[in-house]
Image 1 (cartoon, rainbow, N blue to C red):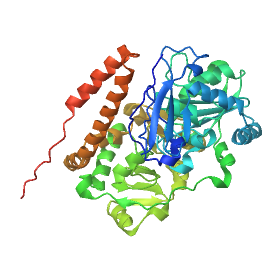
Image 2: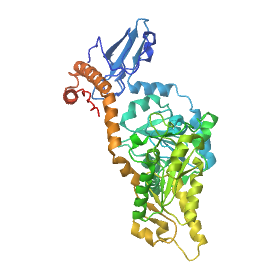
Image 3: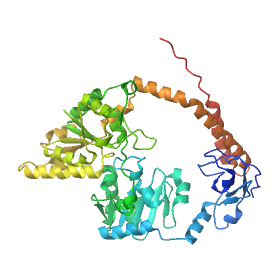
Image 4: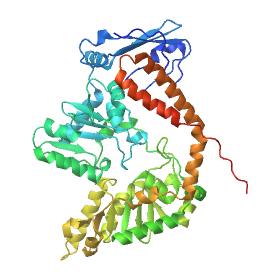
Length: 495
């Protein structure tokens, strides 16, 4: 039985007033979120045996209580107790009810809602946070699946506790990566009746992800339906859905970028020629920003803007909201001979490329199914109109030699060459990285010292209960503490 701890100090996440003691949430073992109590708030860790009667757990649970000078207090219960309370106060989820009505109207048995936006980004603008809206779980990674009678969410170990707290009683948490937990594809395959229809938004799935999912579902004759007309969550969201960001683009100065846009485009065209391709579709936001030396503010904490790009052997086109283009950005792009078109015109542009016999380079892990299907459909139209000419292997290839043999439009599926080019930092980029690290080294070291201090204190009190785990963790903490040394400022030479 764990004895009561009269005093516990934990790491600061936000300052809380003493009168708001009920807002503090503290944990000793198993959580990633630690908070520093405000002045006047005292935290006590007490045995939680009353919550362990129905649990089979190797380690004792800890219930934490917080009190303040205003005599308000609360008890942070184990997650099992929170789940039971959710079930007791279960109220039908209106969002799920409306979404299931849309499933019925579309004639599908299940709908998958990933975290990604149309550019396969992990971090998205508010208007693309469909999974967070429908489930209530706000972590950066996760996939929600809704069927006619159940709803489940998959996320990784970083977010188990957060998801458990945020999901409503109608949702089942699937701890991805845990032994015995199936992937959402395997779960759908086994949960649904044979020959069921699973709907997805093809803009939110990469070519690679869609093929893997389709292969998984095929063993039970399930059909993957691509609902390209509208996103079902958007229909439920309605007018409350945030608008697409319209923040203006800015030029990333050459003294920071190190290489101008024309040089980057020239190098990219050399890669296209070597592979036998005549154009490449660039969809990742960071790749578009790097290629054109542009930065944006569409995604919190990420200097990117929503845009596509298509680079041909002679031309380059940027697809973005035209209101984002300032006079400075317009001049910057004009100097590099880059034209600008509306963000929503990318599919029509791909159709035009196919009609002109383009050999298009696509990265299967980054390009959406919607873009692939649009180009493929245009290729079929091209060959239908060109009597006597037929595509080889459906007009797809992974080798440059094979591409040269195709007389007409086709896709070349390879990893984006921009990925490696962007990873090779030039002298200006390396200098900028060093300067950024030096600027924040002192603050980072202070935060690490606070973390190490609080970890040592907490594990000192719990050591007798977790001897094997504590010894291992504390040895790692001590190693970190000895290894981290504050960097002394580098003296700059005066030229």
